[in-house]
Amino acid sequence: MTELLSNYVAGRWQSGTGAGTPLFDPVLGTELARVDATGLDLPAAFAFAREQGGNALRALTYRQRAGLLAAVVKVLQANRDAYYEIATANSGTVKNDSAVDIDGAIFTLGQYAKWGDALGDVRALRDGDAAKLGKEPVFQSQHLQVPTQGVALFINAFNFPSWGLWEKAAPALLSGVPVIVKPATATAWLTQRMVKDVVDAGVLPAGALSIVCGSSAGLMDALQPFDVASFTGSAETAAVIRSHPAVAQRSVRVNIEADSLNSALLLPGAAPGSDAFNLLVREVVREMTVKSGQKCTAIRRVLVPAKLYDAAAEAIGAKLAGISVGNPRNESVRMGSLVSRAQLDSVREGLDALAALDALAAQTTVLHDGRDKPLVDADPAVAACIAPVLLGARDADAAQRVHDVEVFGPVATLLPYRDLAHGIALAHRGQGSLVTSLYGSDDAALAQAALAVAPSHGRVHVITPEVAQAHTGHGNVMPMSLHGGPGRAGGGAELGGLRALDFYHRRAAVQASPGVLAALGL
Ligand code: NAP
Image 1: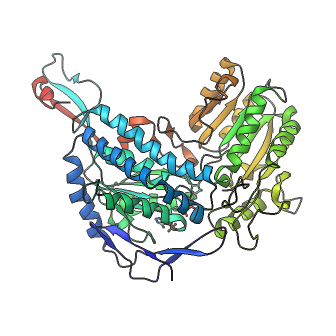
Image 2 (image 1 turned 60 degrees about the horizontal axis):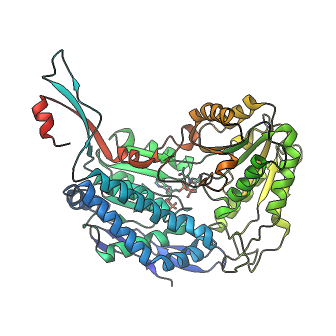
């Protein structure tokens, strides 16, 4: 039997009373550990976090809480090597891909520590200037933001066990709100180990950070009106969460990050081999292959002027041909595995939906298929590895499923557009996405296109030759920029600097004399 990972709730480590659900090495197929949350007293766990954790955190100022984040950074940095080992074993990722999750988390925490320090020694935040309520300024309204007096429940997806926790926990803890995280079962080990290290280091007050590994049963039921819930995962589970009585009846605030059919758009006028063309090709290949395409922000639809369709297919295919796939422990491997055999099945199903073998039913054709190359150091009957596949559809409007089905793996579809208006309309066909990237060299045209796509995207990443070395990557979520998108993407909003604190605060207006308002000390 492998180790049963403990849950940390109500200030102590507690094991579930069930047999547990196994976690596997997705390359070797071996069992690594088990998780179980059976029998935990969740109402008591939430009450402990809400009262002990919340009171202790809110007793501190923003600057002091920023100090806690800095201390967490030190703990995580000290244990980085162990995290890389766990990521290799449980997520099947090569080192560079593990870095996106592990170092991305540490970087994000560090940023919030810095921004929080600048907020100073206050316990509430001013929201705009006071406005007079009558003709004379004797009675005024001052808006302010105060930390919500509840817990923040995070229900996370399998693809970012590290960053998924810390990009949410950084603004929550800085706001004075205790955190209870429920990682996705398949990759819960890394999240559990990080929480364990932070708890063991004793750098956070009791109740500030809890973890429940295993089933999600009962978590939403434990939420009360001033709690908040932040969910990342599939649209189906998001619908369950949205309709839960905690949200529908008790007004628990929720943030949803769901799936997204992100696009990349090459503006008209770029010739094959031009800087803009090459930058698009490079980014598409990177996005298809980093973390084997298991990024909510990855490029799924590639929009190019119709006359460049063949050249783009050739250039992207040529680069994909150089990607070696297999066991991440082998130095020559560029792309490791998906997180599980279940995900491999799901990617294969998605590929079938887009490019069914039945030619009549197929909405796309296969432009590049890396699957005929052998895996490196991995058994195809065991490993959850799949090579990149580039699909294409010459009639971008008719290929409805390409705009509907998110294949959560190394798969993207090339789509030609007639003119820029058509290209922008196709980007909007994602029904709300996390990010789109635009490629070109005409500043004015790019700016117009950015404004045109912005209403259906949380982030617009514009790449010109002058930012070729400096840009941060289409799919990289930087803490300075908004993460989240409207519509299908879930309608959520994370990060974006201190804007992230809004979710964990309550806005109130205090109506009073200037003297009372001044005494608020904001
Ligand atoms: P999922 O099946 O919806 O699971 C997500 C989380 O919800 C897991 O922790 C899961 O726990 C939990 N869960 C399952 N059923 C639940 C229920 N009835 N009530 C409460 N929680 C429940 O999603 P996934 O397949 O793991 O994640 C992949 C998807 O996430 C992709 O579509 C991807 O686009 C999306 N994603 C979005 C973002 C973003 O920021 N927008 C980031 C990453 C991923 P168990 O694991 O124990 O089942």
